[in-house]
Image (cartoon, rainbow, N blue to C red; front, side, top):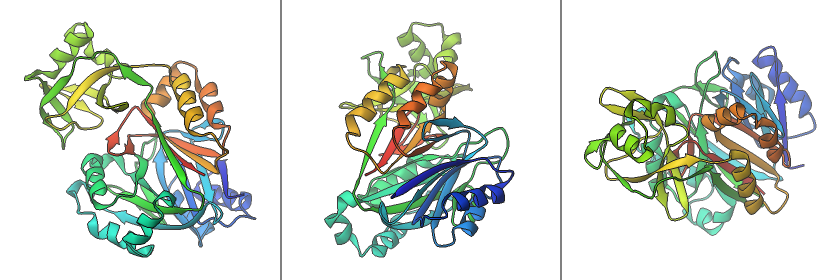
Length: 365
């Protein structure tokens, strides 16, 4: 078996790592990817001690998925051996709020595999995973610079937290805040990436962002007018009621058939904060959320027409909260129970940029 998945609830990180070691006693992972409830202290260090010959990366999570199960206060693990991932290169970029230049880091990763020519010659085999520590709020610029530094596709998500603990990402035995973990995988049989946002265009009216603070994720104006006023106008609701619609009616950057979702967070002074920033000059449509289970099934069935080795679901926390609210957890998780899969409720997703209220899915063939 090329990939194994498991869900663990331990008394602490060391106990959880011991359980993982026992469950994978006959398995030699090249890469151990995990999503751990933020209630666990230093789970990466415990897993690295248990699997010293494996690359270990992970992130804290509000809640976890494993195969057909939705969990909390657990650790979901995907172990990938040489039959699925022949090699992996991991790097950590710290202090991402300072907007670091990523070219040197990506050059190191390319050199690890023999250079640009090797990557381009076998482009269909290489894919990247990026895990952000979300409190840095620096994903937008980081993803833009990552796309400039390499043609390899990186997908992933931002850490989230449960009721206790702090937001962190993990690489090897170390824990990080304000950082991003990059892993470049050389897959054996290739990969697929799919995205479903379960959001549809509500209004064909295009709104132009004319004033925003990208770094602090604050939106002030559409079409030269207060953004809240325009948002209320399009929805046909009173201005004082707009916050009730932030999740059910997010904003969307529409590019052909693709929609990249941005969601309002809260009213702040004379603007509205966002979970993902929008630069001035961007055109958006106002969206409405559809049926998450139905839309996810359509996306999975259309893209995964084979038996994959493993599936990784970076699922926005807002989507998790919606399926919980609609009592749709079991049918949603059943969709992923068809494959060896893990996932977590993210603080944002990475796919050609930083987005949210989306499920970004990496399929290892």
